[in-house]
Image 1 (cartoon, rainbow, N blue to C red):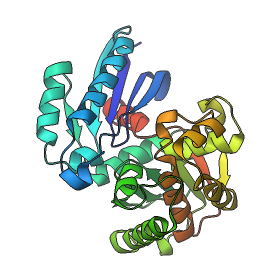
Image 2: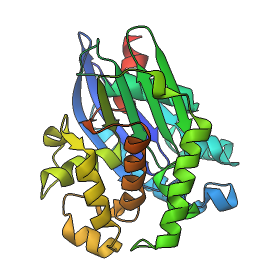
Image 3: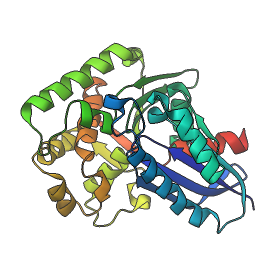
Length: 305
């Protein structure tokens, strides 16, 4: 059976999926993320920093230790918000190509939304009217799908971006929080598709903020993606959790929530605030967490299409 590899050079995490595909089904061998914060510093400098590139390079080197254990028929790599926004993305692509022989395809927000939707809805009924939220490091994608329509919006909202531009302090400072809320609300109202006319029967959250929230909501001591997948989070719980989280510094977050990747301790707070504002703006009381995302979507599109 042929194995394939999908790599996501994301703004907050670099991620890998090794999987085979049989009769239209993805058989996951290994899925892993490493928080690399590629977007760190881009709002102020415009460039992916040398430190960020070092972190990404180390992560990919670790991934190839696992990849090289398997026979692989193809490797597919995408870059998202950080690589779209940085002035030096061509140099980063060239460096990664020379070091790992990887061709990174820098995709648009619309392409990112499509791949994420295809991946996240894997395992879900096809006839549902769905709104999907994907909170990344540099951007947030919102996608609506029914049997006839797919509409998407890419917002310049991400956990790294909001941390740097509006919400740097932990515990949260009131004035910074006010500025962050105003920024999030204004971007959602200004930049997006008008989703108010769409009738959806389910809301789905995918990627690291939402999957981390699922683990915390379940009270897990150790992260378990089989338990977090398809877990439901309610807005009331999310609001209550945010008001606990905003009072904590990163060390306290790590100590209180052992299921959380410690590297997310500085970005989980803005991530939860973005999630809460999305649910409020789109009038959603509960959503389902999907462990499937752009990586599954990439393999489905490249292999099956």
